[in-house]
Length: 71
Image (tube, rainbow, N blue to C red; front, top):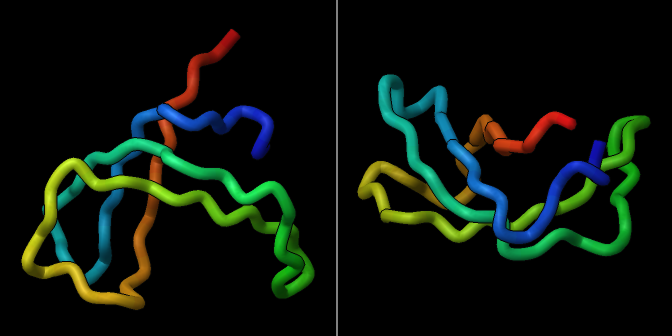
């Protein structure tokens, strides 16, 4: 459902490694081409975080909720 994602949309990230914490941000870039990975199609979406958390580390897995408007 990449067609529902737009630059400027708000997101909320949560992390298994940081229980009870969430970080908000904004979509700043959507890759124009898909990556084929494990039999699926994925698009890289870049997010600019509103704040830095000292617990964040490169390579951490995040769950990202992208807030989209329903028609």
